[in-house]
Image (cartoon, rainbow, N blue to C red; front, top):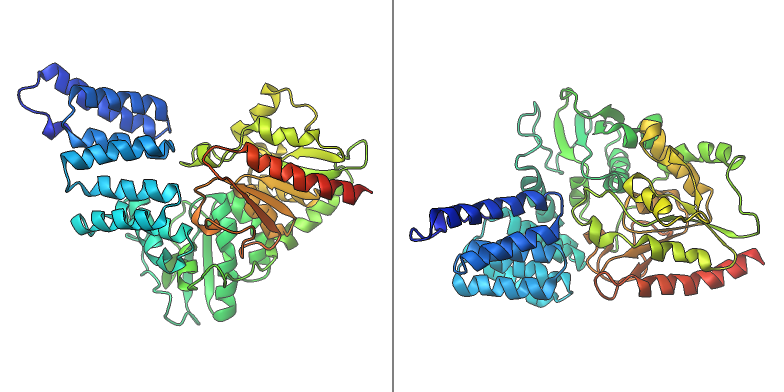
Length: 449
């Protein structure tokens, strides 16, 4: 958020000026925890106290946009521009807001106005690239990755490393490449395929891949097959000739929505033996039924978790269908919805899906998925894990999804086993669930007969 302190008029009382600055800072701090309502109230008070300071408007516009109150965000940002037509961030936030509601051309116009004023603003460049990529323009993902790392981390991960950054073109045979897995678990599963394909292209290259304990265990098949050596995070840099982010391997591959490289199946090969053992103890429904694993929310620390999450009540309503048995794949805070709703018709797969199994929890989750017939999930790591395992999956997406899923279509080149259901409007999940019920009812009856 912008700091408006230097813009407070000198003739304002010292107390009022300090209160506005403190409220603005308070809004910035609580937005780190995604407390949209409280941040909105604080910034509206700032505007009421100082209605001619553009910083308060652009900050409020950002909060409203993140909260998906798009009409309100547009109104506030337009007021900011009326006060200061050269406010680049306000133009950029307008571009982001219109992109969220699917108005691509208008979104690009506003981004272009922003970049005429501030052509090197990393935040604007990042948001513009994200918007374009989500509409299927994947030629822009090189810029998305470039500015994502700068905007999200503030520094280049390899700034102090003993090796240079790989440009994606130099021959790697005979060299050692350090690959840093980053972002969430789902992204690490998604981009692991590029490590495999890289090894096929440069068979004499040594690949050192750094990730956390949970994903390293899940990706153990890559080490067993000699694709790479898995390293834990937060250790000193190893000896290597070059380095790169795993996510940027997708940039190097010049992917489009039509040429995504296939998953090599190494996660499936690793998880299958555990799934066979689990099958003997897997809780079976009392009557013949389709076994459906469900997940309705993801990591609450993820900035867009409120957008992608499905109300548990709606997801659990799938249990109304005959010939259907629901299995919870929900871990973390979202699992508390089961007790809150007393949803004991849901077969809970146990706390082993959570952190108590440590680095083995993802493998256990994968084995559970393989013992289900269908997975129904929001956009979280469960979708990627089920897709990598080849299990039929219904992926329920918000209206402004992660760019890899784009804005259109029922299928995705990333995972052939996934079918996509999309929101028509923000936060309107009931129509999505109704469509899933209609399709699922026919499938369930056919499979149990």
